Length: 110
Image (cartoon, rainbow, N blue to C red; front, side, top):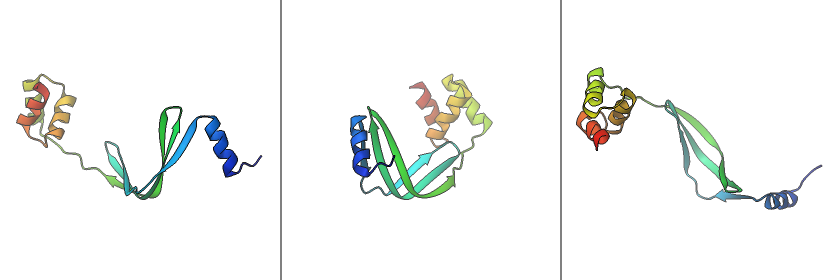
């Protein structure tokens, strides 16, 4: 059974599904801990199905490797001890404070 655009829209309306194009999108970036996906010349559609928002993205994809900042064990240990935090929290605080130990400690203790 073939369905034309009009019938497809009617069916989507009956199911409570609303779809709209998001205009003037320049770039979409998807970040993971290790990589970033930069999608340029993107065409983005938003689908709202019963309160759940989903996005469909079409475009040119470029995958970029993310440089992970490394911190010395001494810095991590100092932040852990001074803030009473786990290693993971200390590393996260150092990343957020661009490696500045004092700011990382303040971030965790205030």
